[in-house]
Image 1 (cartoon, helix red, strand yellow):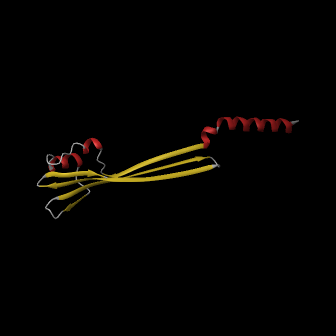
Image 2 (cartoon, one colour):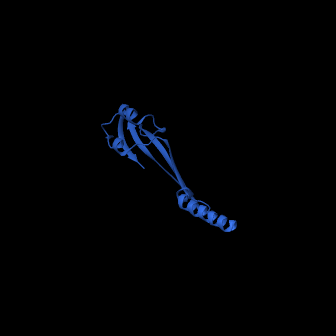
Image 3 (tube, one colour):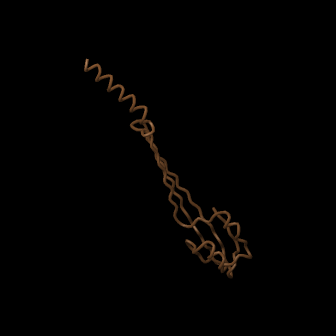
Length: 122
């Protein structure tokens, strides 16, 4: 009689645990990191070739990631960024997955005599 009662109690505890634990058996996480200098569309749209000054560009965008002097006497300034998104998910003892997505881009501004000549993004 004790064995039957004991088995019934075990089955009851397992059933109650299964009803409570499903939320705990699924997990997930995501992480995003960004490095460099990202220039958003609202800021980029304010750059007007022939009008925007070097001083304004430095104040709005900060120091460029790199600079290169061109043959025509102008210089090319570049602000680059990199974004890394990683996510993981798991269903306890059944399934696990992870993904990683890297992206990036740059903003370029060509300067001559202290004024923007050309600007573009990729």
